[in-house]
Amino acid sequence: MRSGFDRELDLLNDMLIEMGNLIESSINAAVSALKEQNVELAKRVIEADNEIDDMEKEIEERCLKLLLRQQPVAKDLRFISSALKMITDMERIGDQAADISEITIMMAGEPYIKDIVHIPQMAEITIKMVKYSIDSFVKRDIDLVKKVIHMDDQVDDLFDIIKNELVDIVRENIEHKEQVVDLLMIAKYFERIGDHAQNIAEWVYYAITGEHYVY
Amino acid sequence: MNRKDKIVIKDMDLYYGDFHALKNINMKIKEKYITAIIGPSGCGKSTLLKSLNRMNDLIEGLRIEGNILLDGKDIYGEDFDVNLLRKRVGMVFQRPNPFPISIYDNIAYGPRVHGIRDKKRLDEIVERSLRLAAIWDEVKDNLKKNALRISGGQQQRICIARALAVEPEVLLMDEPTSALDPISTAKIEELIEELKRDYTIVIVTHNMQQAARVSDYTAFMLKGDLVEYDKTEDIFSVPKDKRTEDYITGRFG
Image 1 (spheres, each protein chain N blue to C red):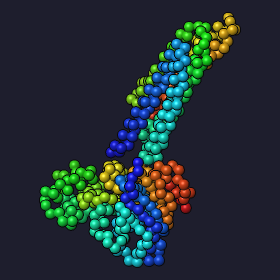
Image 2 (image 1 turned 135 degrees about the vertical axis):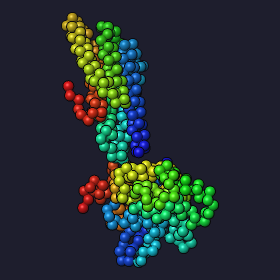
Image 3 (image 1 turned 90 degrees about the horizontal axis):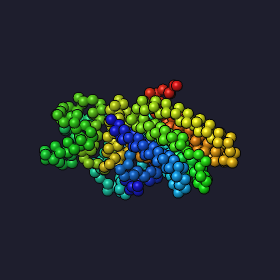
């Protein structure tokens, strides 16, 4: 019954995984470029953002087509409407990886004032959050959803640590103020990526349970 | 994909006596696509469908102007064989109408009329048609059963199998699921999607959601006019005519 529709839903699943893979490698590359001050790699991240934008449009079109043609109800309706909301967050994550890379390019000439330890830590967690949030959708895994939501607290904590460190640096030496602002922005972008991953997880929660996640 | 036009309707007008039922219809129906015709009751959609294999011929006072071309040949032309036309353009009706004979004989009826007598050949045709209509597994052990003694959904698939048995090129369906429950409807819809691989299908439906689900092209008719005819996705997402929009959004009249 409705095997054609089920095939279409599987295809939608596959496309979300593919878009997930794209943003995951984008964040990975953005982090490497930042650490290695690799301008070429940073440029590639910015270029890859177009691909992510295209993917968003493609998935959006497919979702709208499914809504129009299949008139989904119950879990099918939740699944497709959640997918529509998720891709907005996924697209924003792609933008933020590109934004980070733009700052990386601007800072490429100057050595870093401090070891950027916590930023890669933040990156590592947010990459996992993104991966898990999409996995949770594909596998309809509530436990994974909750894990993502809890991980966001770690990201927020790291952001506070970085912010305080940067404030201390500026206090000691006002000369570094520009780089401090740049690094703060990068940290903020990672913090936002975490928020978007959390949004994705919350949509997955809705798709599975039919209810909004309550803290 | 560029498909050939299987049926071309040109400047067609149809009158029942004084009543002008179809007004200057122009429409190209693509091969191996599903084309849906929607519109309120009395808009002429069934009349148009029936014109495609001359099922209206016997209606008194019927007059048709213009042309309907099947593979480029005018089906209302003098040299066009009506029996051959109905073999090439099969039809499935709103209410399942199997003959009150066995399932087997229902399917074999058309091929026999067209001169096939060989038992083995008929067996093959019956099995192939029932398989195509996705009902073989349900009836294969009961082929001698009277076709009226199975469910409505099964009867309708028997009727589709019967239409397929004479190997038509076009299948006309006049609200084929309106008398069926949702599960039987879903089965028929899935079957229709399978069939478009080999057949050109034209389906008249009251059910707009059904048109959106199954068809590639949709025609919207109103009071004998073909108001809009376009890709189904365009009709249902950005209709060009306000009347189409009003009808499909339920703001009609």
